[in-house]
Length: 477
Image (tube, helix red, strand yellow):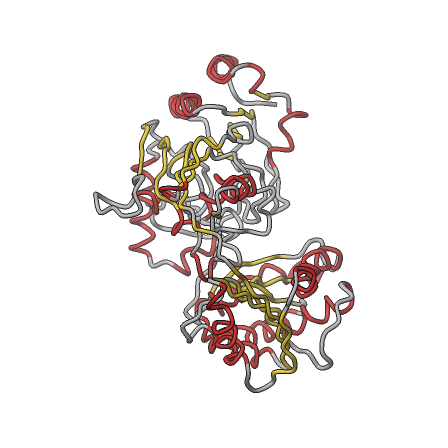
């Protein structure tokens, strides 16, 4: 039963319209899920349609001390949009307008509920694209991309969300309406609050509008696939590729376990003895493409290279990418309860990471499959544990902990594009020193003095009696 007072619910309906407020548990239940497959039911769901409504809802929640969790389409995997402390879920799926397309200034302005694909389609009509390209682009929202600093394969050349936003409009947890950044591509006025809000996972402010920086669609693109005998051979090739002047627009890697899976489940033909696979794309002017392709192909040569394929048609491009696209569905078939961590290490340490993950797999008896955006060291580590196997179920979280220890020992970080949310929250103090963590918490308190925005996320929970900044690993209610 909802803990919200009738007076509060009526105020929500007055602000947003009765048709935009759900309070029946049967209606609002689904908004307690995201792609982490965890659940916590909200007391109410409100569908925002304007900036003014958002500002009013945030202020109302602040006045009544009601937790407020912003939500796009729930495609995130870190539990960032789950309302851990119930309260109100502020859903943006109906606030999905593109309010301006400006090719002359390479900008597009969109509301947070707009899907990534809708932005790509609108930009594409003018010969542009927005670089962040997560695999969930058809479903995920711009608000979610901003909340998590989303990336995707193109981030290796064009950057993630932070590098591709000019400015934001938002409402802080204290109810203040703010604008950050500018409409210009250069600016040196004041603190960079735009980059601060991006990746803050809805804990500082609720974003209501974004000015996105567009990039012209390249004239030409080439796709290559290379197979190697060992992961260490492929990792060495990645380091060589990223050390020469031609930066690929995609550089994806699959380890031996991933290769075995796509052979079995994806029916993809690969060279005999393949122990690792690289997918590489290069884009740019057509006149320079042969030289760029030659430079990259040359660096792919080396110990363990078995075969290199270059696509010469759209059909061949699809055929080469079929191996990569077959992997995720196959993993869901094999291990529907898999744990997927999107860690990052320096490119030069990828081989050490894969070796270390093999040791973690053997120590805990859990198969681990690795693939991802090798060009910037962002590897998706999939722990294929069986939740029905008591030993594996018991070992899953200790194995994740060991993975994070390995990543940090290699000079890496806990997340490249999925965020911290609930799932990585209790490991954050391993990656950030106490003084820096305490400063972050003070910044959060300044933006959200009542602590209503997405509570229980990002920062480890304090033990009873501890001052802010001290952390411990406690479970949620």
